[in-house]
Length: 438
Image: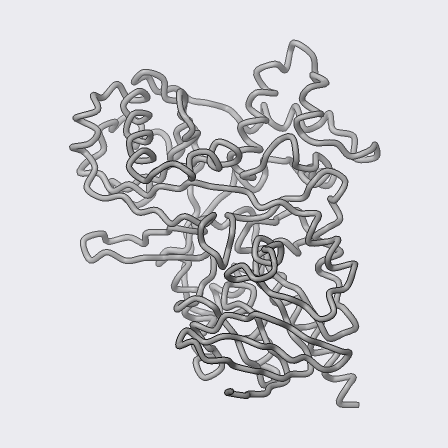
């Protein structure tokens, strides 16, 4: 059995894990990063095709809102980002018109009482807030929650989606950007000084710990065991992995598992997303590409498509989230592609033959079936809006959790949340190590 030791073991080489490890190494702490996959990046998956001159994102794509930590890291890495105009259009039978969704969504969310008892978004909408005057707006809120948050409206906490006073629920959607060279370039920079510390193809199976001591058992891709020892561990595995039944591929057992952590993990659901990246021979709806970056769709599970603008390249993403995505993801791949083609044809009045002929290639990663993710990103269940805060709290200054689910600023599900959490967990671990050294 191979044995290695370090000050801190980081479980997961996604955005949170790499940022945590980078911070630790910058403070001259030894670190081991254990990653089950054969690649770094986690839910960031930027692929390249020699025929396509722009990044192809199969996972995270956008910079949402201000994202100061993301901006800081991009500047340090010498990487640029671009602002994306967020003009929304609506396609119906080939007709394209402007759509103002954000103000409509915000009008409904203003009726949520942050001081009252929590309830699901579904229950909130069933009470018809705003009456007949906001009937259309309530339908848009349902689509927004299922689409953007990838959530089941009957499970997601209304309180968790309600921003602090002075902020709008749609604020992070109405302002967006992209990393010019793709998120993969930022991941590569985060890892550039960690190559000797990262173990790929190393699936963590068990974490045994006592205050000030951690022992991690892992299995290598070759089948051999690996045992690591440290003074602390930062766990960045997605909530879906932390919820996986014992013995399942990717699952991690804890000895002991603190009741507070168990309850915090149980307060989340993992949302489902079906995200198709489609390379077209040309844009068949030129008017849309000039006027709209995002186009709302109807008559099918895919709720929205967006273009690669400001790049002038015929690449579009079709997005389906929430329960509709959960149902679609269980269908055979050929059926998913047919559904996408039929919906494009209906929206832009194109024959199925013309749609099929217009498509050069489709990329798609099934995050639900990925054993090291088990879903797209997290959301809080009714009555569990404080789960991110509970999961983020250190356990006896030895066990630390990071990742988008631990974000306490309302940005769960974003790369910004993951990066911020990794920086936070590293600082907490450093304080603990410094005290131990004293």
